[in-house]
Image 1: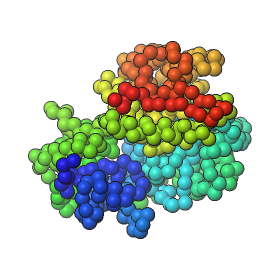
Image 2: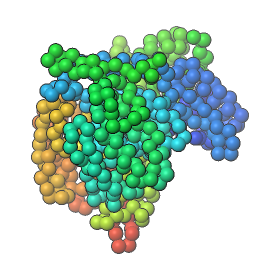
Image 3: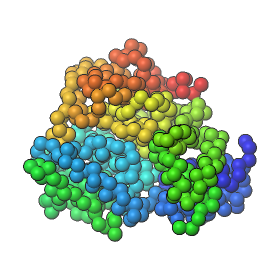
Image 4: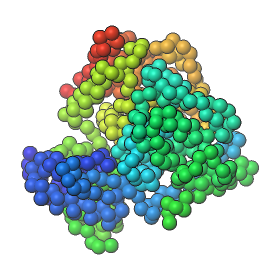
Length: 273
Length: 273
């Protein structure tokens, strides 16, 4: 291979490291890939880190020691959060989204890969801790955002199913009370999915009463694992009392006025302050 | 803002453009962001493009004309496909994955954000055409790979549900014959999800007889849209005759021998040749 110039090494370095958020790459890896001395690679990293910070594109961290190296973390800034959440508010308040029963059509938003990616980065920034080993969601609508959160954190995604599937082997099933419908429902998760003692982050698209989140917490307990956080894209302001405490929503939904075609939704000020 | 050097501009350029695959950014965007002349930005792009190609990290394309600009496409090489698909084969043939009934436990693989991302890039490379406007999947297991395919192509993801949900407004429901179970099932998709005349790429994790894919084709017809391709992570070699033609699998599953704890699975040679 032709020897790379500094310009070229930095371009490749940024691409490779941002493609696997939170993964630690050794300096040796880049030193061999580029055919350059480790000291040269270190200088490249300093340049890349400085510009990423300056332009709010995330953080490049150097981890010292034998197992050390360098990794990328997609931390979002308050300024970026404001821009993103205001864009979501604008989309979600479009009058034509209101459907019979006072629901909001939002499949096109929550399944949009670019929006899910950005929401995942914001949620990952909120829960950026070492003791979280899995992101957990209940099928279906929360999956894109949960997947992108897991990707930004560099950890696996686990999906609980609404019924038991033969293709997932022996499973833990629990019943939970859906707070919004008042009905008892079942969720199921393969016994292999979560290891004992692990830390779990619950992610979902929407929370009303919190029944699903409460059910997921009970499910995690069955695995002798620990819920370390709960994040949702949208929560309703009513009911004020939820079945779970300590969750972080990106947006608050206050009202969907079907008659006047008016929706009141606003960003979580903790993320934009 | 402090004026950026070439090194720094290239680092930021690569990060920004790779974060939104297939999105066309104008030269003006970078020229303003960096406070640099368009000719300078063009020179930066040439350097970034050359190294991306040299290291097989994807393609940076310049689109001429008034609506033109520059975009990133995550095309994968045969060499990269071989490495990735062999890694999948190695994981999928682990004897402990075989569960009662001759099924393979693969939730941890298909929900892994990094694997879904790489599978999505390979599938996006297979169907890299302008006439595809949506990626469509049926819930649940195909969602992570379908989302990552849509992200790599820079287009929306659409998820058909197994039943009709009040929160998605009026919907098109169709019945389909699940070829593997022999049972009639229902799938449902909001009328707003796909626009008339659009091109649709169907993505799923697994194909046995092809009943789900056949159902999704019929669903797309109801929207007066057109199926432009079908891609799956894994297809079984048996039955040889599927209910659909012209699909691209990444892997062929020939046998799961429950008694001898042996699985035969191999990459699609069209992708590795």
